[in-house]
Length: 444
Image 1 (cartoon, helix red, strand yellow):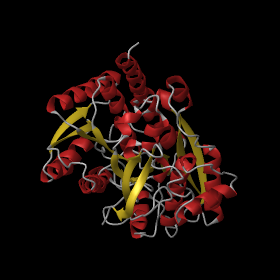
Image 2 (image 1 turned 180 degrees about the horizontal axis):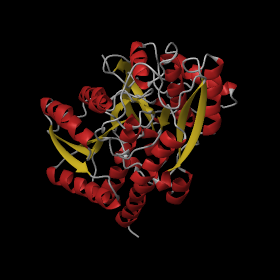
Image 3 (image 1 turned 120 degrees about the vertical axis):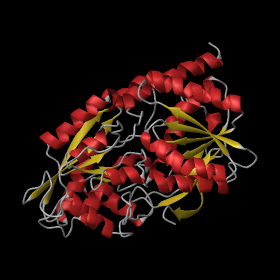
């Protein structure tokens, strides 16, 4: 088997992972008319003495063993949830009520719109949860389903939501760990320009998930800014609905970029499009310099040299806001800031410890969600509902710092707490990604 044929076989395997791992991210659609939103009274899952919150964990065991990709062990997720429950209840609970934390495992190999509808029904109808912590729920029907049921969402999934999506699903959709999409795109393009990514070229390829959110952000922010920088964007919209459309889109993107002489490529929409494109490009012997960000899961790129061509990583640059999936502990001491140390202490009291920051990547987002609920609901008393939570969370301003990041900011139209980032670049010396320069703020 020659190299090209082998790479095509690998590409087929990687692309197959989309159907099973839920990486074929489709952004939320418009919210249908949901339940009335009021500042008084209680939301679903709230009694005089308890409040129920469901933490979703994605099980990648079957897909990992079947498809051969590697992800760091995230530890005992139910035990992590229990440790957070014990901490919150020992410190006043949620609005004076005892937190009932429920863990639900979601099998990645079964991911589909029907499976996510079923999960939404389980959480909103069977569990009757006040809030759900989402990890890996990527299908287009997921978030609108929870919002239409009046269930608060604390989204810990590395897929971007723009300001319009947060507004459309208000007051139900929040991220306790990550930034909003609009601020991210502005920061990414400014950083790429500052790093000389576009120097010497007059065009750049954009591989983008074909979703309403991506179209809106591309047309409103990315395309005008690229043109202002003197770069003509060559966008390739990739339909991630199924294997056929995904594979066709990736291959067509490579053909288009080669025909246009594109030597710089960036990605929009997360969904591990970077991983899939790199493999497809290698199978067609197409090479370019790539932009990367936390939404592209840099750790996955490094951890899977059998799937991701190592040569494609050389020269990668972009921005990072999620240390647990950006850089190794040798590049950023673990534990780091006060928020991360506080969460690790909470988890340690519940018997949970982590060898590396990457092992703690899910636990810290669970912790962010639990602590944001705890902090915002502190004085709500009888009125524990989504609208009252939204007002209280916004009032926290910069007093809430995500353990999954380094800075936090809520308030105004900001419903995504992540507010710190640094330039991120591949380092051939360590065969890893590393941060460069000083930290900046998305809101700056």
